[in-house]
Image 1 (cartoon, one colour):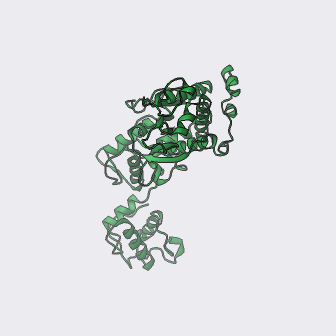
Image 2 (cartoon, rainbow, N blue to C red; image 1 turned 135 degrees about the horizontal axis):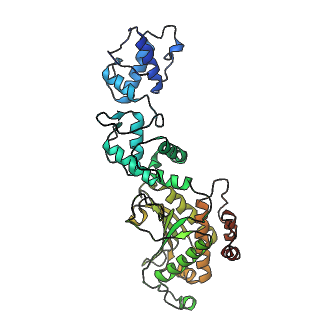
Image 3 (cartoon, rainbow, N blue to C red; image 1 turned 90 degrees about the vertical axis):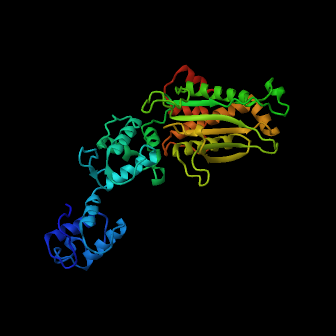
Length: 395
């Protein structure tokens, strides 16, 4: 019930004051002696109602005068709804308004679907943004924020902090997933720089050690293991149609090697889409994947762990796809180059990457401590026993 009509002020006595008390409570004002059942005569606009009105006006940036006039009553009406209380849709000739619409607009804005003012008014621009969001969640793009849309959002809200609301579609995709790699779509890309290491590694490789040689070999090993577990490998396609889900990777990896004129520089690092200054993740799943991959690589290799870092590189901003850039060491460093030239080491790197990917999809209770999950153990999350599975278990 909302309050409409003439202004209400201190010492007024009316049944409308009871409705005003209830509206203030629903709007989140929780002062003492405001609830109708907490006072002897709830129809009186007493000091407690006056204080509650002033608190609400202060919170909404209204003129703080303690009078429930038209602007205050309109704001109270909009404050009666929380996101999920009602279906939100575009109404021709008269726009739906409310705090729940404003909350929806904030989510859409963080997700990158909505670029208008967050004004709590469900206009045409909000409808288009909802339709695009629904397509990314695998729902019909009706533009109506209905029960199905809200349930899809509520399933992932537990995992999303307000600063991470932009990652809603990523969490929805992960939430729908099983722990299995089988059937999952993954993209793994090769760094192709041809600059050769200055250190003598030909005895191990037979060829000059270049980024292309190392990354092609490691990516091939990663893809082979993933296919044997039943994953599907696809190329990254930045021009992919929004809402096209069949070939949308659940994770995109870019594999590189570093080079620096200073030969002392060494170590592995991972990068995710985020703000370099603060480290704020713009893709929390990409951030988590980067952390898990670096943990496994750090635990299983003797190359320095340089940690995970936020970057705004275009390669990390693949639309709707969590992405990680992995730099596996410096070819300009003697120790890193010798390790990357060793096929046994490259297999260890590939195993570590696959195990890191598997951990990304495990539920909290299924996850294993860093460095303890063997490649053969991954079979229990991918139970279909093919001949390929049995070969992997022997790796």
